[in-house]
Image 1 (spheres, helix red, strand yellow):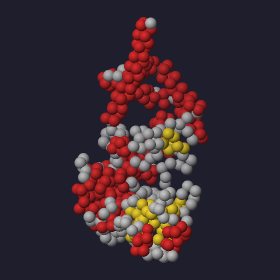
Image 2 (cartoon, one colour; image 1 turned 90 degrees about the vertical axis):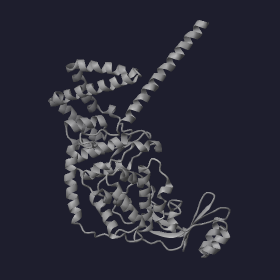
Image 3 (cartoon, rainbow, N blue to C red; image 1 turned 135 degrees about the vertical axis):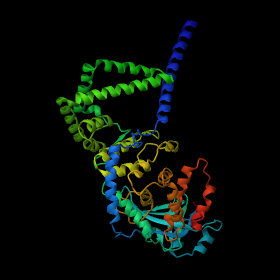
Image 4 (cartoon, rainbow, N blue to C red; image 1 turned 135 degrees about the horizontal axis):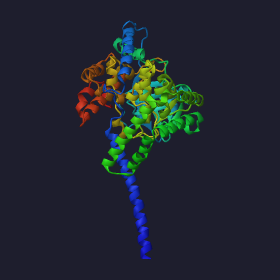
Length: 500
């Protein structure tokens, strides 16, 4: 009996140790991955090759010259905004309140009757329109900065003169608009910034094709494609027959996966890299020059287009041995969705699109893809804030292209009511961080202060300029303290500075 107990304990312990080894291996793998930079850099210390940068610089030179000769023919106007008050009323009949508003109750009498003890402050109220998934026009009324917001489907039944009302779950939300919503023409210098962004970023171009398919983690069901399978089998067979020593070596490399020591893992990584290089050389110098190799690859490419099915591995073959343009078309047919916060595949996919676009002279696709990387604009199943710090903005790649980066970041950050269709709007949080990584951050910082102070600019955009400054400062200071930027915040109107 004791023997059986000891034997069972031995088996159990062995299983636990085996699992622990696997856990330690993946921990080492994760540590190694996090220690590396997000993307591989070329010899120019950029994430794009010197060839790509050279081609892009030519295009930017033409774009800048085009912009210099371009007159501003369009007046950009702010989103509709007003000053007012917001009330959240509980314990009163919605119909009774609505009746009082319809009868034109004054702000003073409303406050006495429904909110006698509430301390309501004057606020900036904005109004925006959008179309929802059911193709319904929705009007959004928001107390800035995003303190209270309502979405209205039927404006006529919710709007009574200065009053706007909507029914919540356990409360009634009411806005009192002191001055009716108005738009304001942006001063010339700010309109020029928006125009510069629209000059650089083609509003008719999208990164992905209309029939693009979404894949979690970038994986597709490539095992169902017979032509691709035939191509891979051909490559694998030739490798085994003509380079048997190299093929056997990968089996030895696989054994390092069982080791958990840091030295064992380092050796595994080094040997794997060498093996991949030798295999790549064989493909480039010998196999790819054979007619049957190209025939199989062309057939697999046609199949991938027809089935709208591709993946990174196959696209690398296409880019290397057919053309970068063909590989780019395949990549644009795939929308990569992140599986979790630590899944880098959407950003890697965008970077690959940007690289291929640059080398194929497709500027419009390149810039949108790179701006998506800078703004971290990707679909993910989850996105925890702990993962944000590892996603860089790569603003230096734009700076070396001789782009007027300050005008570009302002042009995608300012909000207007009449942008061009598909105008690119940046994330204030990410753009603020990008400015912090810019070589011209001090100059841009000074410009932001002037923008915050500028009473000729509408209140909403002045507030956004403050948030850009705040995110810039947060990214620069390890020990960020909100009180340190209070003098900057006080440059805003009181009804904004008291709430931002």
